[in-house]
Image (cartoon, rainbow, N blue to C red; front, side):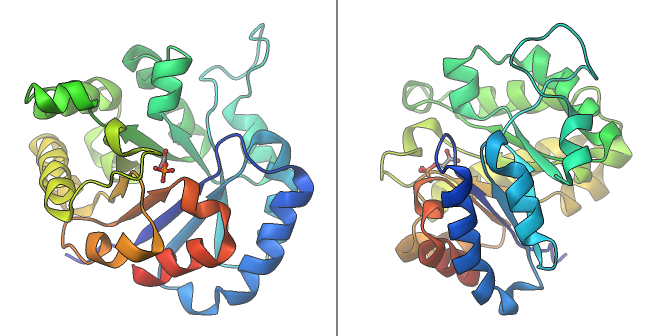
Length: 250
Ligand code: PGA
């Protein structure tokens, strides 16, 4: 089965409105050859509207980095799915390890956010992955099983492949310590088997990305692997030429 490659630029808490627009002015001029893949940029909330405007007549789509599961209410500092779709945002990163570790995002919250995102018409990019200690303790598969089973529990089988999954081993994020293509492929095949255990067709169709120190010089080794459908890129996505090179490697 050939799955459409998916490349996402996770800018985290980087880029002002002007910096985001400058990135896109440079990046969008060169995306002509990327029409056969999904290319998504994830700016901070403040730069979403400007990014949507810049990307309007391009193959690039815009994602948020988080959202709240409720439609509205007394949730100071939070943003709902409807607020994002009303801007023209089309996808949302959920469960990034930084949100899990620094902002106490739980699997229970994610099990509410995922159906809320889908119901609003947002494509969720669900991040999962083990810590260094968990890998050393050979607990990688147990961690991935717990996260995938809990986070996707409320999603009906027929919609599982509408979720994009990113396997991001925490020890590889922002460390320059990339997982080997073998390690990444093994974990991704395992995640795929978890989805397939719920629904065979969804297991084949679901896009599973690798994230963690993806750079232009390691992208083709990772993205050349049968199981690895794309990349969620942090640091290297801040530079338009670097992110373009990674997109082209897919
Ligand atoms: P990195 O971040 O590419 O800087 O390691 C990846 C991520 O956190 O999504």
